[in-house]
Image (cartoon, rainbow, N blue to C red; front, side):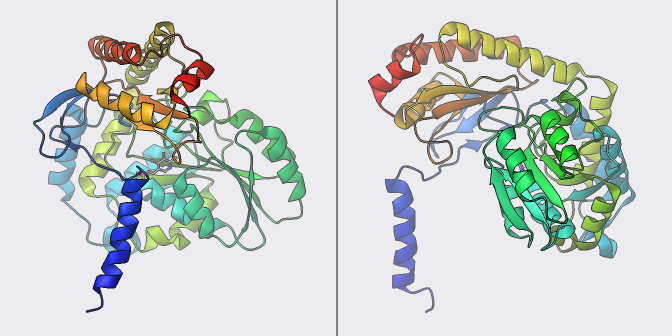
Length: 415
Ligand SMILES: *Cc1c(COP(=O)(O)O)cnc(C)c1O
């Protein structure tokens, strides 16, 4: 037997190590649609509990929106369940082309290519457009999927300190001899909720003749005045050479992603990107759903406006209650607790109070920066936010952290 007892034991030991380190992940089972309130089974086997959800990427509340669900049903009836083929053989429908065209219009780019996910978009794009003569210069905190995509590409790699424009400039000067330079950043960073300074980055890219790639997964649909993304917020629409993004967050939350940008780069992805060439594409009902999402968002900014005012209210009230927040202006609102165990205890108590949030600690965030990351949604109505706030305050009082400074909290709980 190849999977011998010794082999099995080494894997069991690896799993045990994760348990011992307290980083073994346990999933909660949701028995309802994804929405402001969900029914959760946790721990497995426990009776269902209705809780307010403040940890989904359902920023625009479209994951179970009746219009989107109806559009997906229509897509299912009109174009079937699946493609049973990759795009370039016989897996492209008219609606795939339509979605690409609509994304191009929505983002204000030249062309768009769909991928099974944004993880796949990031895995494919670098290798397709860069070679050994080139360099990729990435922010040190970019998303795991960008890191993996960078690894798959033969171009040289370098990095700059998070959002540090002086350091980026040094790197651009250092690599002035390379054929192509590509600067790589997330639009909004998911752990801190901060926005990349795209205006300054574009300025540097223009000065040093570099291209720029922005992964706008935590922005598309709601950041910027009309929700086009961080390039709109930072006033650089039309100047981002490559945008990668997901349909799995604000834009309906189902699945799928894309690369959008300069038409030659998009065409090269169509010819060469391996996750595009060798993996099935987005299923027809999902394509139809995303098209409907873009129709909704292009007709009115109501949902992103509600999200913005919800997030403002949430930040303001948590701050007034005496919590320490990571500063920012996105719907990602991290409540800083600094101590890992405190973040876990806090999340558990919130759940008992009917609020579902997750505590993050090292290695997901730096040592001593444990937090509860809250994510606000346009699906939240005021009564959800008020109830969630009450729960935060009640648990905050229990641990006596309201109005305390970082040092005071660290003195009480350690880091
Ligand atoms: C979520 C996320 C992805 C992955 O998106 P999928 O479509 O779910 O694969 C990629 N990049 C960033 C920055 C993300 O936040």
